[in-house]
Image (cartoon, rainbow, N blue to C red; front, side):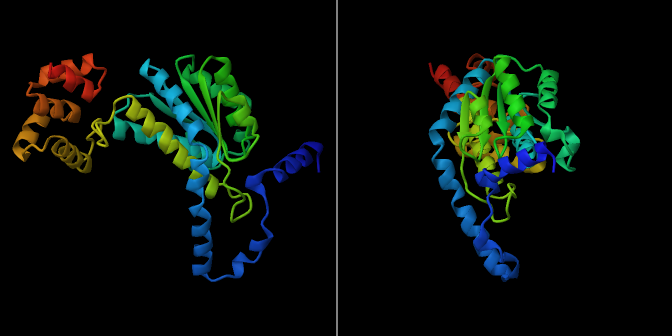
Length: 309
């Protein structure tokens, strides 16, 4: 065994996420229902682990929202499962919040192909992370979230370190205490979920914890940016039949208007939910609704206040 491999093995043995649990050594002999109960019990503690990090998560969100309000982007960077979770969260933002092209981005070690096929060695390259961020033109207006269950993945740590050197706001999301990733970031978020059911399989509890945190980072940031009205997704992009039906329902919930009035408003605004709600609630036409929203930076509550005089 080479010195480098021995060093990595020793390092992994110190990580909570890699710990071996002897009490589960015969899990493969259990009935399927018993294994399912074990997994479900393990998962039940993930939300509590996230709850312990809510102050750090909230501080990161406020920082991200402040930069995005000035035109900055939110960039996720990770390898393997962590990278895929970042790409997933980024890909959900355009249909949910009508974010612009490139406003929320996920980069994964090894490129798009790594979403479905493992790209060997990509996660070990901090230089690859630097190149990926430079290709995006990351700068001081942006926020970069490095994601790594272990908190030691060179790609994620390298991304955060490079982004911070470029003046971007940085967040390090990991599942081990005292991680290099959290240390490299301005905002360290360490959600310690403990050893996995299958030793080292961090797509399990660690992956669930990361998904919960990423949900918070993007969703609450978009709430802070005015992309919701109450708990309604008023910036939803109606790109299919389901979303068009959801758009009509959102307008109905926000206004209590008749189906005929809703269809008329959506037709007059090109299907824009915010504009249609403003038309109905403020009694303005489509062009004025669009102007009021533009002057209010897309914030429906502010536009309603302005329209009400």
